[in-house]
Image (cartoon, rainbow, N blue to C red; front, side, top):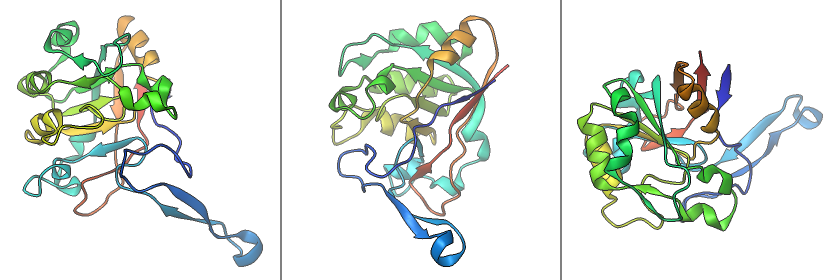
Length: 217
């Protein structure tokens, strides 16, 4: 079974405050030019996307400098659904997946906040504390995704503590995931979950949109 973990990319879709708005419109049409081609205007952090370490520091690796292994692998899904708005995901929550955290694992944090996509409440999402992010890195994990706008609170502190802890270890971060519920069910049933977060191949980029999918075995 393949599970789509991505939000649709459409004109006027939600973006992080201050990011470029998304505009998609026909550039060429069959009626006028004989082919259909869309014109796209969007930011590198639009929709479901990954952050490269370069996103928060010019001295850190850009997207195309990272190994492809950073973007796919077996998933461990952390269930923190039910947290109130703007709540921290604390270190103690990691105990539920501690046995699954190791190098090569893709840690997905299920807040349930994808249910607020397109509403003002989406900005009031739970977030990782810096200590939680450091423990994830200490376990060898270098790929972390969340079904929310950011791993840090929105609006973010100036130092972006969770981003800095993860990106400083050359980890990648996937944000605006959706539909992690079926993966939690599969994990509880002992089924293998493999995740792909492969981005567009943009040179020197801070990040890129992805078509995030999971294969449930």
